[in-house]
Amino acid sequence: MTDAGFDFDLFVIGGGSGGVRAARIAALHGAQVALAEEYRYGGTCVIRVCVPKKLLVYASHFSDLFEDAAGFGWTVGETSFDWGEMIAHKDKEIARLDDIYRTNLEKAGVNLFKTRAVIEGPHTIRLVEEDRTIRAKTILIAVGAAPVIDTDLPGHEHVITSNEAFHLEKLPESIVIAGAGYIAVEFAGIFNALGVDTTVIYRRGNILRGFDEDLRCHLRDEMVKKGVKFVFDDLFRHITKTDDGKLCGHTAVGHDLIADQIMFAIGRRPNTENLGLETVGIETDRYSAIPVSPDSQTNCDHIYAVGDVTNRANLTPVAIREGHAFADSLFGNNPRTVDHSLIPTAVFSQPELGTVGLTEAQAREAYPNLDIYKTSFRAMKHAFPGRDERMLMKILVNADTDKVLGVHLAGEGAGEMIQAIGIAVGMGATKADFDRTIAVHPTAAEELVTMRVPAERIRAPDHPDNMLDVGLTPRA
Image (tube, rainbow, N blue to C red):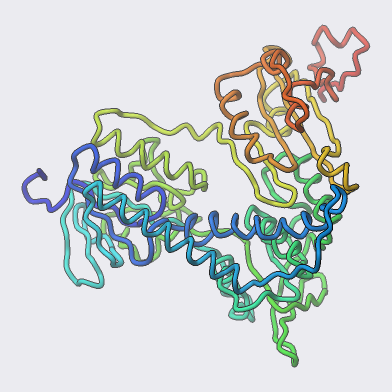
């Protein structure tokens, strides 16, 4: 039963992962809930990035598998890839997931509106297509983010983003990807493995800014081995069409990068434009994100925000956790917030990455004494057919407490491994806990519990170990 004067206890704007979870959990707690979504349910992850991208990653792996099969005694005949058929299968799966999300919301009792919604007051939402207003005691903004294109760049109208990449009519023969984050390196791996001549251009000197440096360098080198080309410390100045219909990206350094497609993966911007935030005094930051408190509340008492629109940790599982915590706190009598300090994550690059905890640079800044365990090796699966691909495993340890501060992996299965490792690191596991865990043999993951000697020991100048010859790296 809603309070007098309100149509709903909660109105959610946006049907992505965070909004869907918040709406469903709030409804299951007994709240009267409505949700407005103008497109499809599932948001960026399900519709436009994570799920369809992972399906394409799976498809792209087969080129290596067919090649490696001979090393294991198989004879593989002529192979071919049908882009159109793959995209059709992808679309069918996205439609299935959209239906599941909608069905689960309806089963929970959430009222659904297929329309754009904008804020007109602290408790008022306008349903644009229906041209009417609804009043809700609480409003939750969960509208996500969209790919950035530099509209000041001459020729920007010729480029695509990850949104359009999933709907290309045919697989290009060549592509240049601007950017070096998750989406850029993942799509570079996909296109390259599907036989597309692939180049990545980035304004800085290495990929995946913010990740551990060893992980960044390892992935870059492995991608180069696989045929991806990189242009660093450069960016596009303008883009033109050639006489034969190709695109030419003219760069600041003076390169002319010609390709069938140019894709921008230079970041994402929160979808806060024309949302009506100014009507309630909500100001966005310089990234267009909505600042919120730890419990996801904006500076307007009855309006909250979760997910990428807040630009805290732009990952689908984080948005889901934020939406769940919000619903439990307001409608489930279980106040709680989300800890953003320790988030395991994977990059479905080729090879795959998994990471949790501090990078080496962060650990060096925060702790005076560190033990760094690191190994690089060729996995059995790759060694047998003779593939030149190496795995990297790295563990950062606080030498004073033996606590594991970070784990960084590169290689097949890294994403699966880091999920379980994230549990251990989140529980405060020590290196001794890793060491006394019996190895699962033969696996690549057993290296995580068999590294005994640090590759590097870092100690403060006054540490007792400096009196011993143990291969220390003194801290400057």
